Image (cartoon, rainbow, N blue to C red; front, side):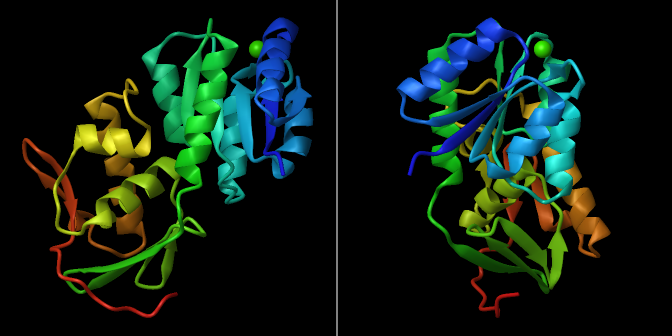
Length: 235
Ligand code: CA
């Protein structure tokens, strides 16, 4: 069955060119131009292409609302504002990727494919104990647990944690983490990685864990765990 992409964009020329390119690439497409319509269509989307400035609301609010409802629907933001602050804010709010206007519709389609590929990676559960703290990441449900407490993570935070847990004890450089979480060749700064790690640590700490569980390896990157495998019962 074709994957359903909801395009939220109030500029008709842009909306039509993006929808046309997606349809030509065999996606099922719903074209919406307001926050209200997007809100209605979002639950049935496999991915959302979202303009940040809508006539009746902000794209940021839609991202927040979806993530608050624990919906992991991937979101690609269309931003006319070519500022790093905006892009970082979108990613930190829980968007998966962004495209800055003007863009070619083919670029949007390529981003859609890349994000769907990343999200659709095979399911697996990783359990690791850091010190005596059991940590569990389930890729199929995209949920992470500390002991038995669910961590409320954004997609980026989840992918960061899941990447670090792929090989516990291994040090991942920021460049490697950017490749894994955002995709190859994507212009994300080291500072952005650091700020997501910071919020991940805060959430671990709020769940009663040790924020040092995600260890900074000075001058190199980040590491979780000591590499000693554990067996844990799933949550
Ligand atoms: Ca707009």
